[in-house]
Length: 208
Image (cartoon, rainbow, N blue to C red; front, side, top):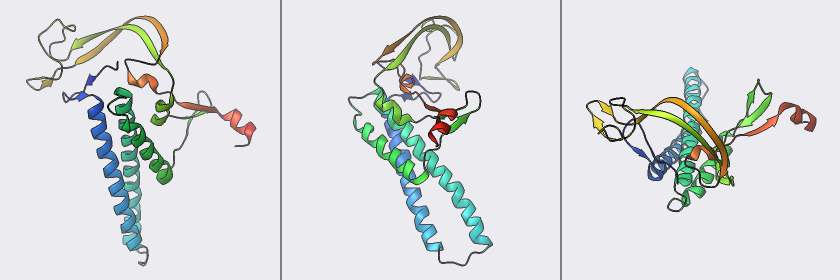
C-alpha cells in the first residue's frame, strides 16, 4: 500500500490530488499550444519586423512553458496511477497520451552525466512498465513541524493548521540502515522510477 503524504498546504497528495493536477495541466497545455499555433499561423503572412522578432522570442518562452505543463501532466497522471491502480486505471492511458503529445511536439532529450560518461533519460512513463520496485528498510527520525516533538507524542494532527503553521512530519535525521528488497507493492511510488542509461562509449561503437 502506497503511503499518502501531506504537502505544506495541508493537502493529501493522494491519487485524486495527482489526477486533478494532471488533467488540469494537460488541458492547459493543449489549449495554450492550439492558441499559439493559431496566433503564429495568422502572423505568418506578415512582414518580418522588430515587433515580429520580439513576438517570436515570446513564443519561444511560451513553448517552453507549455512543454513544462506537459511534463507536469505526465508526472501527475503517472503518480495517480501508481498510487491507486484500481480506481485510477484510466490514468495509465492518459499519461501515455500526454507523453506522446509531449514527444511529438517538443521531443524528449537525453542528458549527459560527465562523471559516469553516460547519457540518461528520466521519463515517468517508464515507471508504468516496471515489474518491480525497491523497498529500502531504514530508520529515520521525524518531528512535528509545529512543536518539534517526535511523531504521535503530541496533540497536533498532520494537515491541520495551528496559527500560521500547517502540521506535517519533518525529516530530522537518518538513524540506521537495514535492507534493500524487490517488491511489486512498495510503500513509496518513487521507487518505481528508474532512469534509462546508455554509455557514450557504447553509442560510439554503434555509430550513434
